Length: 545
Image (tube, rainbow, N blue to C red; front, side, top):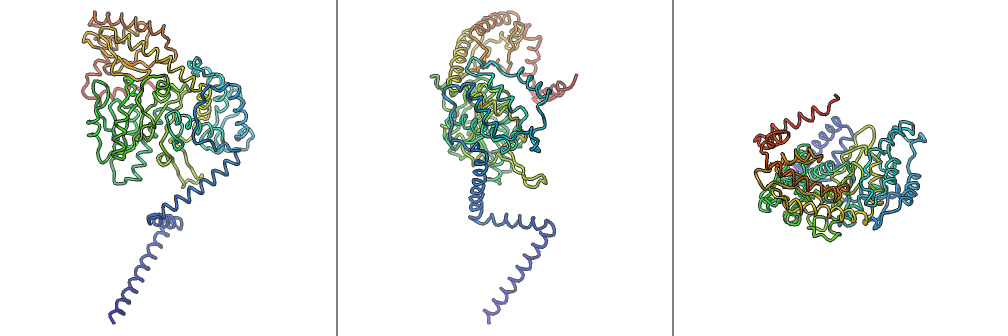
């Protein structure tokens, strides 16, 4: 009798559950339609242990099949080796030109009138003018380091109006990007698992990396509501911009007299809300390398991702090391490093704007990719922040790495390090000045050792002599570039010596001109006022006069 009662109760409960479930389903269908119900059903099923993993496996298999089909239809342009090095010797212009012609044959030709997106221009007189203007504003300073400028122009102009938004329309651009990323990864001691993408410059690479790690944390650690990232105070301001854009708090660690952060302070800055560790190789202000290996050890210990900003050093440090200089490891040889940013348009000798952000594996990069499936215009996705991307820059970046070759980059590093060492030694020898910290490559800063030698006044006097000085708070910055010859730098040293004597002998110089303004700005305790000044300055400058 008791069993019958229990059975009856269970039967009633079953009917109640089914009824409630039916009511819920009907409600969802009424509010969101059949598609909404199916979406909720799949979402619920993915919460069951093992189901989501199975879906991921199936998705990867289907994507692999789809990409393989596209690769075959594009004559294999979607496939390349897992690792690829910058060629030892620069490839001849004639060979690159022939390869360009063959690759262009496999791209969609917009002039046929059979494509309905991406290219909005025709080969007209205006088109030729645009090409001519690009030729006038190219960067030819790298000619002496093996870069055959004409071939880079040819590649750039061949894709002047092509759009890299859809990798299937212009497979040659996909080849250029994946191979450029692969060559960069190889240079940074990455293995075949390292992936990345090209961006418009260092700032976009940095923004992209921060966005990637923010989204990664949101997916893996949803309990973190106020994410933070930790960096030395010398980290590039682009990270402060990323902090503002993506609502990831930037926690700064102070630096010491050596211009490096103290690791005790760095550790203390890490909290349960920290999602990312940051460092520079080197930092721009003084050219000093952050303690990458020490921070890597912390990253591994705490299971945190670690991004190294090597936008300025990425295409110089590897070659400085090959030239025989002792350079601390900063790249994928360090186990804790999960991503690196490096600018092609700096010491990579590429045209503006071209940078690379690379990740240790595609499980990190997947959080960089944007996908949107509810647009009436069809499925939309992009590898990074930008939608439309200029094909000319991507093509020219690939051509640059191929044309310069490892020998060209090595020669550049040797030449510029010779100039750098000359300047460092001679500026250190000037009474009243010294090099700040221990720079590791072709950029440095110098500071004053005497109250009577006001650096802002020194900068003013140097500019009267025709030099354009890079003022910083407490230092003057120098980045050594291909056009800085030893003869030119001997003149710099002579002028600095004379200027220091002039400033030391005339204290009034520190109270006039731009020296007075910089001195005042540096002493304002409320940096909000200074920020307001900078905003007002840019807001006023960028107006048609």
